Length: 333
Image (tube, rainbow, N blue to C red; front, side, top):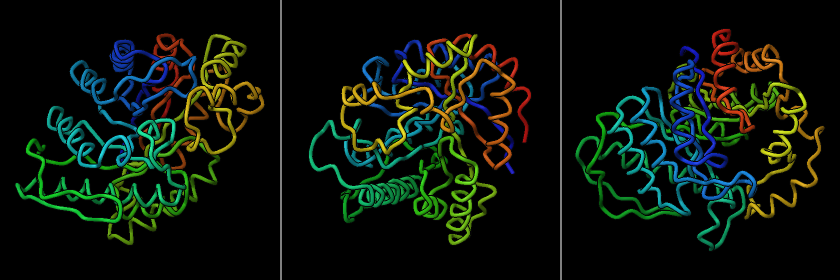
């Protein structure tokens, strides 16, 4: 069983790249283990205001910190062919050996449909994701031993090629999922699982399916990373914490699938309907650090070994300092 690490979820949707790097440096100084940063082409709502290129930011973070680094998550197959994602991930690991991981998801129209074309239904997006993972892992393994490889599949084609800049050990491939079918396939075809906060019984079922898939591939699920991205709202007062959630992260209160919504402006219209009660069961909103610690500990107890925390407000410096002092040291496996 792996030791617990608690990292900082850097929101490129909310903060400019220089700000994100600065916050990550500060987070490491206060006991956060590393950096998860999502690959967004657009913010969720216009008020968030940013969408820097994740690979540039992770490189800058890598130069100024010592912790782990991961795009959590990126989606191969629409804006980027899987070979480009493989090249980016291999280069990052070659620069920072042993520190990086590659988080893969099935995509959201908000980010991927900017290149237009047909936006598929969820089942096809899942199939595309797992074929992309097959291609990426094939390219990693062949390149690591200096061989060329090719791929002709249902969705992707790669002519004879290899990655010429390749780390000694490829970065692990983790899959972001919240559904049982994809969880089982993740255990079978990937190196670990990423998910977000949800009722514990749902996460327990997700882990059961993940373990089934891992064992089907003769892997030990207990040794595979289980990563949680946890959104929360902490501030000096309960009122400020609630206001931050509604103003800065209304998408967290939207109780419906969001993968088919195409623009921040559409999200902004839907955000007008979000009310405080919509966050119940989806995000902890309080000024009480003990309540946050207990909430995070529940997820650790169910089996997560890596947790990345995102405080949804603009009060990042205060959050980092307070949680580094009062929350992270009290968490345990």
